[in-house]
Image 1 (cartoon, rainbow, N blue to C red):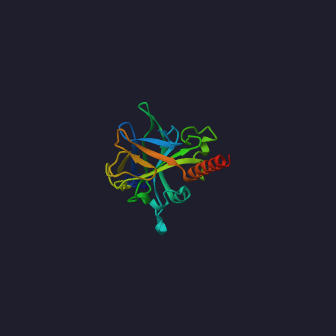
Image 2: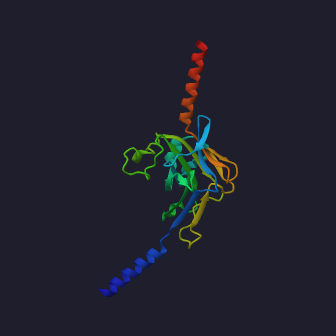
Image 3: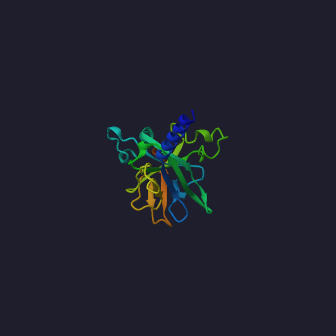
Length: 222
């Protein structure tokens, strides 16, 4: 019996040692581009509590992420999230994040990493306050409360192979990475003075445009 137990312990140890762990460190910390949101032609820091996530997209069937970057419903239907945290204030600077996530899903290995940042109507992410029923639904499962978002990628952003020893199993994602592009939103200026800029969700923009049109028609009638 003791011999059998030893075999079990040894087998468990080997399985644990061979487990793949992928680690992603992602940041927009002081000294890197901050995160901002454009609303009614005013640009300001993205409020704390909003969600920032890293993950990839299911591109089966030829799904083109860049071509669908303006459709939040299309993106949401293909999104595979790896980790997410919240925008917060760091070093007295708003619109920041400096996070780390890990996982052992080998399905991510070799896939491009995308950074997806949201602004919700409530500016509250579920990870901020689990006691708040509103927070538990923000962002909503159907993304209905998303009022703006930015989607970013860079040539160097690829999920590493977690079977490799550290630091080869680690991917560093920062807001000032070389070649950083915004598939939806903007990448502005150098790291120290620039920003990652979220833009209003298309339906919000359309609604604003409709309001302007109605006001213009009313003025003409007068």
